[in-house]
Amino acid sequence: MLNNNLEEQALALFKSYFIDYDNFNGQAPDTWEKGVLGDFVEIKRGGSPRPIQNYLSDSGLHWLKISDATCITSPFINEIKEYIIEDGLKKTVFLKAGALVLSNSATPGLPKILDIDTCIHDGWLYFSTSRLSNEYLYLFFKHIREKLVALGNGSVFTNLKTDILKNYPTFLPTQEVLSEFDSIVKPLFEMILATTREIKKLTTFRDTLLPKLMSGELDVSTINI
Image (cartoon, rainbow, N blue to C red; front, side, top):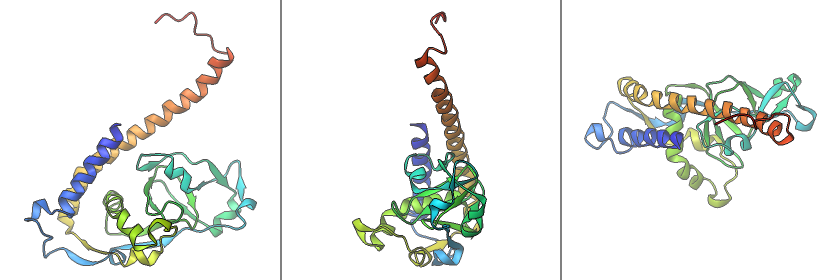
């Protein structure tokens, strides 16, 4: 698919810049600040009103579940199935579209960028402040996901502790390098987002049209193709 190809290009660029250091004679420049992820990003956990059954509703605030992320291959989430009532807001975390989230339970270490406002439960991590772009962090987490799982309990790893992320060794490239990298990968993510939105529109159209065709409510027998 187009989206997969674009994401693969972005991941290849990330590897070239920040893993293989192709533009820097094969090693990280001394001007890059070394540290741990927590030095450059503020990592926080979502929250869950309990018992959740008392807060679920047919409408209201979107309620992001891990299954909303695992059912799509796109980096972007633009469809969420469940809602909670506004009374649950004080016990959860509300994020605006554009925020980056990372799963820390069930299917841990999965990054996604929101294309919809939503509340997140404590099975999600989010980043309230960051010196790195969402695109950079998304690709960073995709690259290190297997290592994060290995730092947990391997095949039975079910919970990504915040401390694992905060203490993960990394570096902060110079602003010049980050700006150059972002200027290349952001257009790729914009194309992925546009395609993701178009797929949703076409899927909605199909799901609306198909029942009418099946029931005979919509007659296309006279249409000449």
